[in-house]
Length: 496
Image 1 (tube, one colour):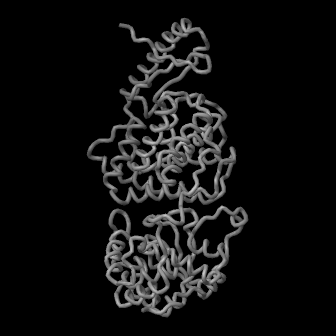
Image 2 (cartoon, rainbow, N blue to C red):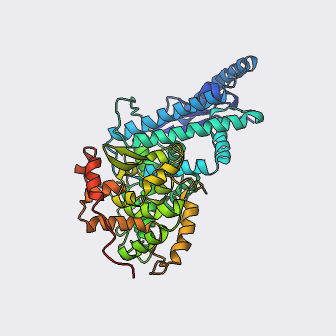
Image 3 (cartoon, rainbow, N blue to C red):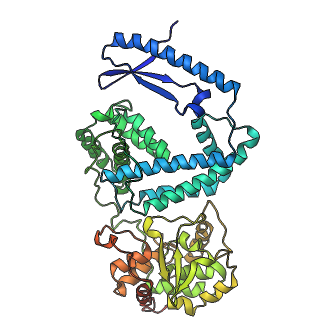
């Protein structure tokens, strides 16, 4: 029985779609061939498709024969990983340039930081499994079969390349885009909702959990919009408004509603920036009010000044990380993982000012682009002997060497210990709305009590604001920050 070549109708014109043999994927550079049949008549198109397909198949047979006669040499693991890294960096830059040219770059959007740092934590959490999964994906895409005895070496090099890629993407996210870096392609392609979602996932390097969530959220919209095979170009704002109304009436929390709507908007925005579609019907229609209600019964609270003093007095009798992390939480406002992951070399001095240098490293992730910052050491920390502690730990090691990673984080085990320890101190510290992160909230409250300007305590805590004016310049100097930090106090209320 004759197998007719696959034909696709695009913009009224028929195209031949032909699969490239798997043995040629690595050398041919494509997995499919598309060729215009230059006709709108299906009968003529079918006849032309048979002829063109026969030509391509004969061509493929010659290439396979030549390849079998002189087999392709498998590159070294490092060269293979380097080639992957270079391709991925090029694709990422093309995406960023296209987004910038279309005016869609959002300097306050922190989602990319969250995605990439989460992915880095996954790689650190189970490097063997993640490396092998990455190798399977990359080798399958490239059409390369890696011998069993070499898989471990290839997986290791790819894992290192993936980390470099994610760190570079984090760095790029914090800088202006050079629009001269890539020449744009203005071609437009019609595709289905399912194809758009898969193209987005293929190019965004999301962690496994985010991929599952994306499939779920796209599926929810597809159920209402007519299925994953619906043409994206036919989806209108009316479809979006209908879906938005259903989500808002679903009874889910505001943050979940925003996530359900924002995911679809992000995918369609990607389609526009990648040149796959012309418009994003989600623009302006994803606003959800009350995402973080101040009166939420589960919202974290700051410690009172009295509770802060109880915690610091109790921890001052301990040693190592247990002695210092509580104090650093109250006097720096850092997140738990930022404190627990500090290296000895991150405690520095510049022009007489000691400070913590919070920055991205291979071993430490930051939550947002604004999280990279410098925080002056409060005088109370100096008086308590922080520099003496610094002298006792190896200069090339961690500031708290008694901590170890669990699940890719230094703060996980410490947080579990802290919850039980604090609950036993009385003074209402066993409240479910209080936790180690509450010290960060207390720092913000102390800043307000000391009349610290909002832009200063936002800079200290690494909060990205929406103010356009604050996006200019490099922020307040270290000496100015030190003056404001010195004003913070938790001594207003005596311990009862």
